[in-house]
Image 1 (cartoon, helix red, strand yellow):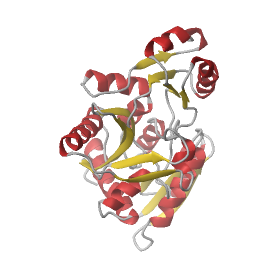
Image 2: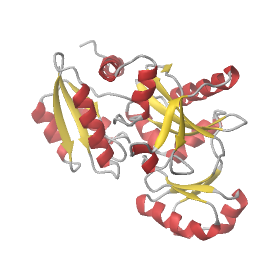
Image 3: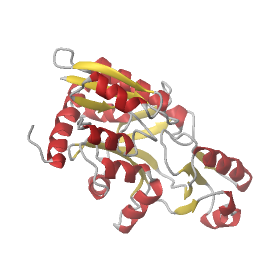
Length: 310
């Protein structure tokens, strides 16, 4: 099979996407697959490069805008090229943190409380004061903690809000939930071992903690049986409600009261330091086998969606 590994893109997560793509290429079984790197530098690149490559499947290594938000998925569907991961709707919903959290909250899944601002005209320090510091300020879309700030007091608020608005037209100001950061990877409807995260040089799991060597201690976390049941239920409920397919990663904060869902990632990172491969490895699934499962299940999913047996 000719596998087009689509990476790069135009979002702030471009460099992480390139790392993900190169890691995927390195682990694809050469005896079974021909890997074709497809590096996207602008929107118009995708259709032209995919057509020229003549690929059988698009293995998506994109993150952020024009990649994880349903737009690339729509382009590939128009071209009739099967692709890995969730479809258009789930990709778009999960990229929009405001909308996905509204749906999760309505379904009874715990999410942090907070505010949604659509511009500096909404800037209201008193409203944040009513939530209570510390708060997390973040762009509504995007990932890898880019543009996300932990704000401990009012004098830090304005700069954090301005930085977030530089990344997005809509931002969230959320209550900081005190607890243990965990992540639940789901592969073909199965929750893989739960990973606990302890940042090494920061109070929270920021960009440096995620991607620098030694930035965080990430390992399978043992939980009391009842708490593990609640975590798994919250992860699966989020996955199903937002109509995710094939695989996803659900990030949470585990407080004393229970799990709070922070976000659902439809194209989680697959770099050497990424959490999904670590969770899969803990389940006995090596990186090449993980990619194979993702591709096989994705092909089946696209056949179901497109109503074809070919």
